[in-house]
Amino acid sequence: MDLMASRQCFETANNPSGCKIPLDDNGLKPKVMSIGPYYHDPLKGAMEQEKAAMLYDMLQAWEQQKPAMLTSLLKAVSAVEKEARENYFDRVPDMSSHEFVEMLLLDACYILAKFVLPYCCTSTGTSTASQTVSAMHDMELVRDIFYLLGNQIPFCALEKIHEVLHGGSSMSMPPGTTVVTDTLLTNVRQLLQHFGYSIRNDTLVEPWHLHHLLYMHFQPHNDGSISSSVAQVDSGRKSKAITYRWRAATYYRAAGVIFRKRHLDHGASKKWWFWFVDGGARSILDVRFDGLTLRIPSLMVDNNTYTVLRNLMMLEQHNPDKLGSHVTAYCVFLSQIAGTASDVALLVKMGIIVHLMANDIDVANMLSRLCSGITIDLDEPKHNYLHKTRKDVERTYKNRTIRCGALLWRRHFRNPLLAIAMVAAVVAFSCQIIQAYYTYKAYKP
Image (cartoon, rainbow, N blue to C red; front, side):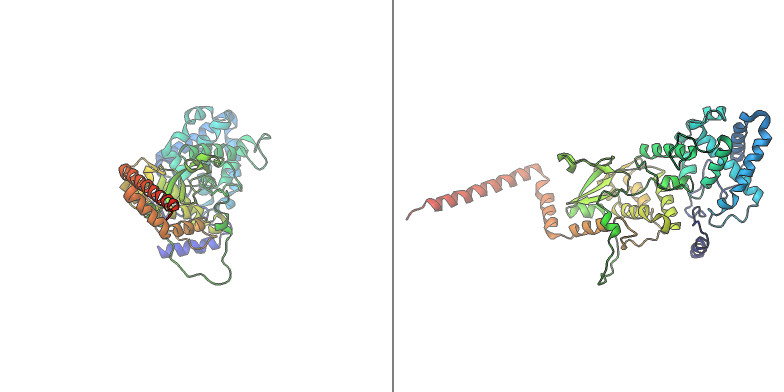
């Protein structure tokens, strides 16, 4: 394990484009469709036959010009072979140029036929389009194509092949955007909105591959609550070294911290009901703390949640300088506050976790192993966007006045009868004080 990590670091340091598509070290492998060199196996007949069938259907539109078009596609892929190899951590030395180009062509045509052409280009491969228009609803296929980091091909191959087939970007597209990028962005946004991961619609950089396209929607929204945690750098005297760790949700609740679900919305509520319903979150990463309330966007946990978050973290782990560690910091936060079944039950009750698992124990076990083997300096503000949030929550947790108030509430005010009796006693005592005051004031010896 250490030797493999050292080798990857060495290769990444010598790779100018970074380790964009590393060797798989998650134990998560494609189930229905392998893409890229790391899972390429010509002996997997069903998968390779399906890819070849996609390519054949795409060439149907050229009738007598099929050989010429196929030659043009091979030349186009050959032109980006060097650039494509730079995206892989080891540059795929085990595959010859012919094998690598053929693999890229088949895989890229499969992705285009499944996720691009049916939505934008009906003139090519119409039969394929009619059969694959619901590809984004096939969650096993989506898992393999979009969620798995090691099951990717560079975006340049998709762009190059589409350019040969349809001639580059459309005049109606925004500057710097292509038909391929725009179509895939639309599909990914709808996917993430459906599962409640993100509603972001801004993209700042050109995607490396489909998993990076997914990753681009997982960025914390700077609404003023996290700016200081990113920009703050300690100067002068050195602070005492501490071991960073979030506490369990049940511990925070017992100490007086209030948990509230934060809704994904493009505008934060400024009305009086803000305390109960807080919008303004763009993705699940938009955690904020104000007053005594920790507001966390709802996360739907299913069989793919671990795959999505784990692979997003691995992309950050291999490209820390270019991507940062926002998803990693969020996953550490989530795994530590929801590490037991009782913590999960509390967050489920508050609507922060919505799961489709058999029970809360399964969710806790999945979240507790989410960050296994992950490295991040969470005590460094520039590496952890939740650094200030954690310090504020910890300060509240250690506040004795708040803890005593929370204890009093749990012991006396949670029972309605005891609460009424307590209020009645306070009112009676206040009346006696007032009566005694006026009696003393009216007394004339």
